[in-house]
Amino acid sequence: MDVKIAADWKELLAGEFAKPYFSQLVEFVRSEYATTTVYPRGSNIFRAFDKCPVEKLKVVIIGQDPYHGPGQANGLCFSVGDGVPFPPSLQNIFKEISDDVHTPVPPTGNLDRWAEQGVLLLNSVLTVRANQAASHADRGWERFTDAVVAAIAARKQGVVYMLWGSYAQRKGAMVDASRNCVLKAVHPSPLSAYRGFFGCRHFSAANRYLQSVGKEPIVW
Image (cartoon, rainbow, N blue to C red):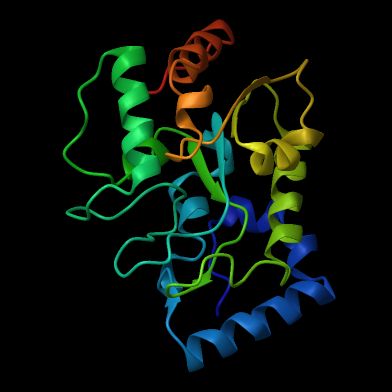
């Protein structure tokens, strides 16, 4: 695994890349890619960072680990490639967007268009074995992505954090809600969406906040 990441992220996270745990993580991930099927493909591991440079970042959405089915994970949380059927959580996200800001459900689940507007679609764990959810948990990725959130929180203010489910909310606990917009709801999965994700209106709330701090709203 080569750590190929956008230049401004590389500068921001240089200290993290130099730590022993990260070297151990790289060794583990390289071994996994060499011996089994792992998603996303290696060139897409850090794609969320490449698509959303630090300077453009306006919104952070936190997921858990990549989709573990064939052809789904593309390096952005909740996102799938063009032509790939929408996983259930993504279907629910699009339903809430449609109800909230009245845009139609798009033809593709590829969320590059969000990332390019400044939405960091960050999974907590950046790799996974095929068909084995959470198989790369507790190997170091969580420590790395905690450092990412901490670095954003220290470097930038006026950022919207969308924290869906207890896992994302724990990860975002370090964010200063007085200097940013922190939006919390249950996870959009079918198991919980009806308990408060539907109707959360996070997408319109995010845009109102962005406009209040002089930033362009996101075209969801």
